[in-house]
Amino acid sequence: MDYNPKNDLESGLSRLNLSVSELQVEQLLAYLALLQKWNKTYNLTAIRDPKQMLIKHILDSVAIAPYVEKTDLIDVGSGAGLPGIPMAILNPDMPVVTLDSNGKKTRFQHQVKVELNLSNLEVVHGRVEAFAGRTFQQVTSRAFASIEDMVTLSAELLADQGLFLAMKGRYPDQELADLPNQYHLIESYPLQVPGLDEERHLLKIGRV
Image (cartoon, rainbow, N blue to C red; front, side):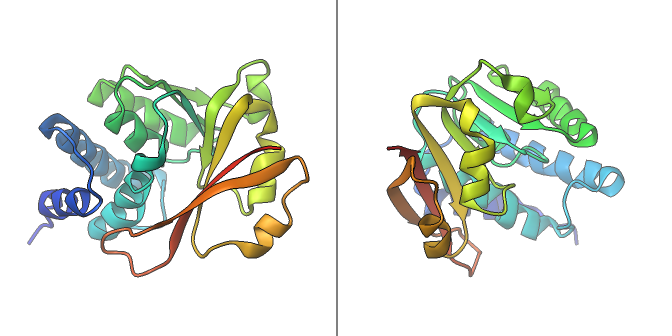
């Protein structure tokens, strides 16, 4: 029998205490369906099972929503659009930019933007260097191996009072110890991702 993700999605959103409209639920489901469809050809993610896609991509992304300010946000190395596209869906009035250097992945993201009518989403194919002169209040990513890499390679994108939103698994003591001196941890939040029996943390990092 084909897997129907709607119940698991709605249950997960409820457990995360997220208030979402029926339209937003449908958009998240449509995004998941497009991810499954395109993944067969484009290899967007190593995860093939739709239930695991829902948990490890959609719910893992929306788990940070309570801690995201309603200003603007760029998702660096966005890949298939995670967490940027779920953030754009949940915050239709917030400008969201997704940046990735892989053309296949940004083509997929463009298709999602069009099919879901996400007018607040800007998909950019390119590298960080291409964004000289543009800064954002929030810079997030699931792509970097370490927080040090994230803040070093994305520094030019961060507004003066902006925040890095680092999505990590276990609490990264060593990575924080290795942070360049001009940055410091402002706040950390343990995340409980429904269906995921693994530690997850969101860390807010700013300039000293």
